[in-house]
Every structure is written in C-alpha cells, then in structure tokens.
Image (spheres, protein in one colour):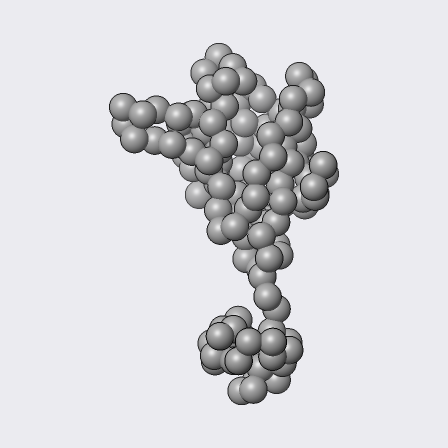
Length: 139
Ligand SMILES: [Zn+2]
C-alpha cells in the first residue's frame, strides 16, 4: 500500500493519485549523498533513507553514527560524537546540528542547535574544523 502524504489514506500499489484527496502519490526514494572534504579531497558516499548522523564512533558509549569521521581526523577537527543529522521530508533534505561543541555551519552561517535548515546539492557544511561539500547524486 502507498500511504498518501497529504491525507494519510492508504492506496493500492501503482496508484498515481490518491483515491481520497486526488493529490499525486509520491513514492519517496532514498537519496544518494556524497560528502566531499574541501580541504583534503576525500569523499564519503552514503544513502539517505530516513536520516544520517555524522559524528565520531564511540563504542564504549554505544555511539555509532552512520558517518564516522574518526578515520578522517575528526577528533583533532573538533567533531562531536553526534554532531549533525541529515534527514529528509520527501525529496527535501534538512541538516540539524545536534548540540555539537564546535558547531555546524551551512554556507558559512552557523546553525542553531536542533533547528533544522534545508540543504541543497552543492551546499557547504562545516562541522568543527572540517568543511564538506554535499551533493545529492551518485558520484
Ligand atoms: Zn490523499
């Protein structure tokens, strides 16, 4: 069944328009995300299904972010264990700082903690001392 995002009605598979409210039924698809280090050139590819946490793994505290920046000097760069969350509403992507110590910046503007902001392909995200360019495409 496909659940209508507008009215919540359940529709049969392959239905294009909601039987209840006639709005188009959008099948939400996972979004490919590419994070490119502006300073160092490495990149990380992940698929955004519902959300992605970017941070540093800490098995002792059972913190296992989807993107672990320990291997990329995350500690020295001031990345928090749970630094930033990317999540999506339909095909729109939002970034939310998770109360990180050194902050998150979107295109050089500081994000208020726990206040999501929309992110677009090509935007620059700075987490502590690491600047990442984000792309929503297969690279
Ligand atoms: Zn509907």
